[in-house]
Length: 199
Image (cartoon, rainbow, N blue to C red):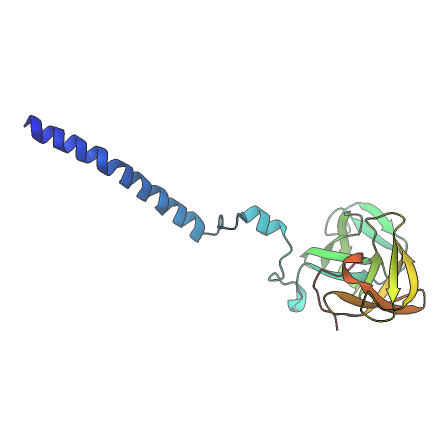
């Protein structure tokens, strides 16, 4: 009996780590299957915060997406409704903003400074506009004749200047700025996503 008892205790000691590893792997499999983490290190929270083109808004339009202001003067409210206080007022038509959420006929927008608020949907336009390097003060961006760094310079655009998009290839955007037409490095513009193609 003593020898049998010793054999049983040794077997338990041998099997215990295997059982524990199995339980841990099963737990990891469940967590992974539910999308709570991935091998790439992306957590659910990170995925939720990152722009998702799978989300859709009204008429199947993606969220987030860039639009522009339709009117000269637009109130930005603290919530989706006229009962919410006005947080600030846009004073210029055509400013690019990013729609990041929606509730009924209201759109939650983010501007180039990172400020967020709610605007009634009819005050927004699908026309695409951009702002030149708003994150870098006193920057000068080349407006080129063709989408190539070797191309002739048409003009220089200072940071904060606004223009309209005619086309984007994913690397370059054909824009019109103050009457000048040319190509700008897409990464130097706010109002279009990196790699986004606009036709």
